Amino acid sequence: MTDGTCTAMITGTNGNYYIAVRQRNSICTWSSAPVALSLSVPASYNFSTSLNQSFGYWMADNYSEGIYSLFSGDINQDEFIDANDYTSFDQDNANGLCCGYFATDLNGDGFVDGSDYPLFDTNNSMGVLSIHP
Image (cartoon, rainbow, N blue to C red; front, top):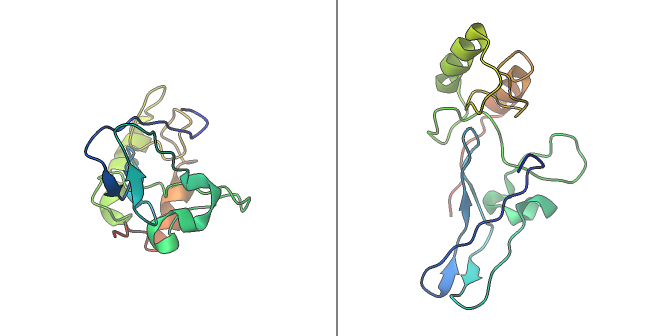
């Protein structure tokens, strides 16, 4: 959703599983511990409430308000935010892409422009990568 929430219904074998979340340009983020899944009882998991909801305590709090989110900037989905992601952003920015759902729109405002670059730059400088269980 545009407010950052997502609901997923998952069916499968009863058991305990890590939850992994991927999005068009974010780092794959894993739950901090396995979650009990059942065919008969729905499970709920909220990554945004605490840093320790993610494996390795590795999520963004862009506005220092205690609401955690996935790191943005992994445009090529190789689980690293690095120079390999920049080329696609630079090309789409130069072409002025707008009004759509683009992996290079890092802030989710519908435009690929200079306002997306600070997310890439910060996360690239921090060496953001996916941390797996």
